[in-house]
Image 1 (cartoon, rainbow, N blue to C red):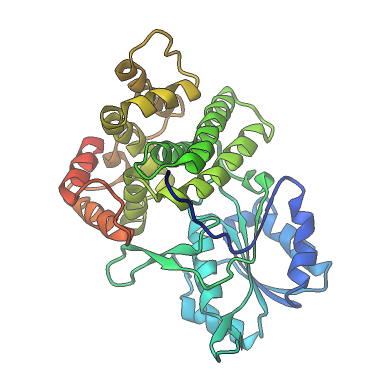
Image 2 (cartoon, one colour):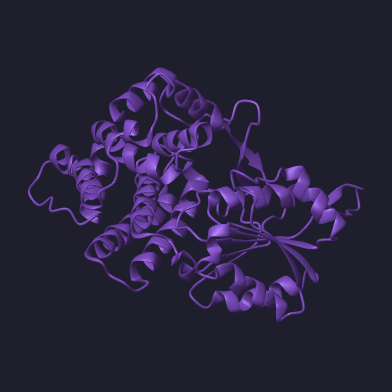
Length: 373
């Protein structure tokens, strides 16, 4: 039987009312906070909502909403200098994965007091995601970018960070319908690759199969134009389950490649993942046939009376139908990528995870990218 071991550093809150608990928790760490957020969240007043929660607990909050803006992007060192000058006691990250990675890195590097060994202790950090999926949501790590090569690097978080994660589906209400659809497909890629991974075990299977089921329902509701929070709640639940499952299996080839394309060429990760989804499933349908057939049934495909090979092919076919129904780009070239550049993404993907769990060499990853081009 496969052994199981993982660590979750902080508290986790999920639900539409959990932000009411943010104020008391933040106040337990101090009265001077720095909020690193995506400026686009002003539109739906999510930033103002967080500021108001903190203000009611007498917490002075400094807002940095240009950390990932192309024209005014602050360096990590500038943020750290600002935090030290303002005597920041707690960091909060609000936004998508790019913003959260910057916020988590800043919190890791910002030293407060020293421990008994004389080593600096990082400042407390609370995470507030506004997207469904973050594979390292509950992990003791985050995605950094090598400044010289622009390739993604998996960096360890400081011990005990984040102190808490607040997953409130209402924070995703500002996403456009098309971006919501691509995020759901990105999350579906995480779930399918995780379930089909050679590292899967009883724990990850439970997470990923439930996530696949939730996403099948949520995507169908989104396509039908359901206006309430139901599709987003299901997608958020699936994203949380994927984060727990990935703590066991690691990322798959499609998810790692889409991350590499994002950091190297500034392509939205979810768009790249949506393009790669059916092509990755084509390959896995041949090598993980029985499991793929099970995934097809969980997604709601009619596999009655079909052999496993036929049932397995229903998954990539379903992915292609979803891409067409959502009017999403179907090829990497539609994202402005050049064929002679994407070899860099294949190399970066192989280097990303130090555990080297990717089952395909660089040339095979490049072939996959060419199929999707």
